[in-house]
Image (cartoon, rainbow, N blue to C red; front, side, top):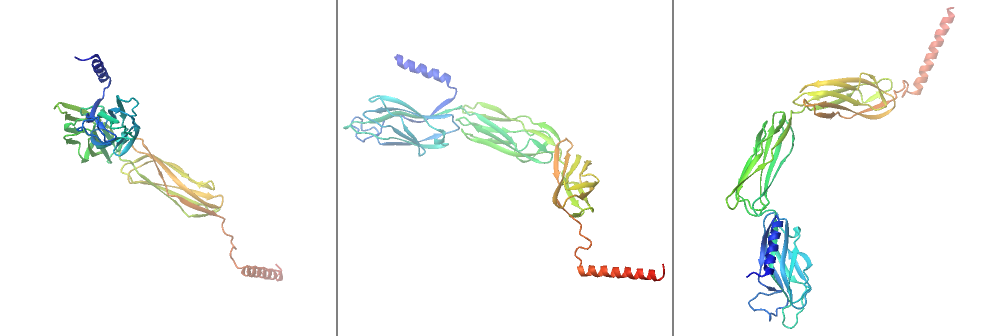
Length: 412
């Protein structure tokens, strides 16, 4: 007959089972009592194992939510605590027994960083024990390691990534699809198929993948490359995946659609700037030439030129800012204007061109840097020999004197 205590315990278990939505798996179990302490086992049957330390292995399958170890401890005389380690990483001094001559329940949470996928090792030993006569001083039993999962049955987390969502016509886009079994049990005859959007064609990879069995934590993934050739916005139908569980029940799910916003192949403008001379003299000026080339496969719309001149120059003819309108594929336009220097020095100048494609998407291109040096023009007599200048002046004076004498002698 079931006693009232057993009935109460069973009722509590049923209540907890109703509250907890996740599934719990016992990945390790050891029910037989183990003695940690001295090797004097007069209180125990010689057939029972004993030792100062317990070492064993267990396996972790799939991504779990929480992990813990549970056991019952018994201290006959005095015990300092337990030392628990997983994969050679120590937890700490845990589960001190404060009630002697009595079995005490102990639960210890296992941190995520202590465990790893698949095979794991753990060890349990007492930190410090005292032997009193021939009595066993420390024991434990009903040891279990538990993992809590979102689901024991196969369940899939589906992910899709695209290298680009705003696609230029003719340029490739990489698509990756992954399906992760976040359950514990395997999925059989797993099959996934994605669907490409209209206006795009497959250039590499595959739109589908099959694998069996796909165990807990395993990932089924595939990738492919698409090229969109028709401008516009497109969205594919949702892809599909299917699998069988351990009872051979068929399950299906969806893969997110592939979305493209396809723009036409863009125009591509190059800007070249030149000055008639890198050195400009005061009062002489120079000519600036800006040529815009369209090296793209489509025309450029609403082309605007803005040339930034240093404040040390003035525009003496034409304009550095111009609306060039439309430049077709393979075509070019040239703008010229005159400048004059105001102050001496060396200055850098760059032209900027703004334009649009046929959908109104904005672009910008910059020209090469041009350095312009403005200087004071050299004197006419700069660099001449002073003696020659003096001789020329003397000759000129003599000439004028002779002319004066001749005119005077003739009475003119």
